[in-house]
Image 1 (cartoon, rainbow, N blue to C red):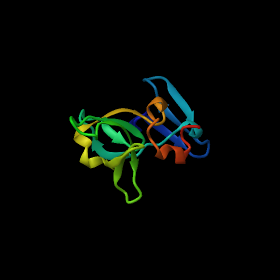
Image 2 (tube, rainbow, N blue to C red):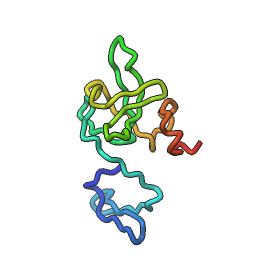
Image 3 (cartoon, helix red, strand yellow):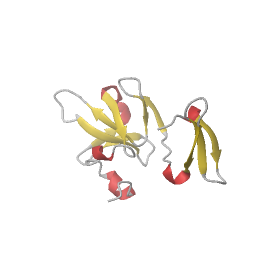
Amino acid sequence: MLNADDVWIIDFQSRCIQYDVDEYVMCIVDFKDIHLMQSTGMNDKNGVEIFDGDIVKVEVPNTAMSGIYGVRQFRSGAWRIDRRTDGRELWLTVEDAEVIGNIYENKELTDNLWWLDDKNLLGK
């Protein structure tokens, strides 16, 4: 995963990006291997920025809210956390959320994220 500050060139003609690996090595990645992740503008309980497509673990003692959720943008524009059994707006539980991965790099954590089936991101 790259931060925007690491990207040197976005070449739309060649459909690739170039980024700096260290001081002397530049890497080139084709657009087909890239997933842009939009920031929610919120941070988890550890100060980690939360992005669309992140997977968060929510722990609220003595409630049914605890579990693994996927972050996505709802149709009305609100950022949501959802899983097969329930969901809610992210801002309601952000102080209890911890980013543990994302839907692109951690597919083993996506079993309960119903909305991914519609997007066919899991290759099922």
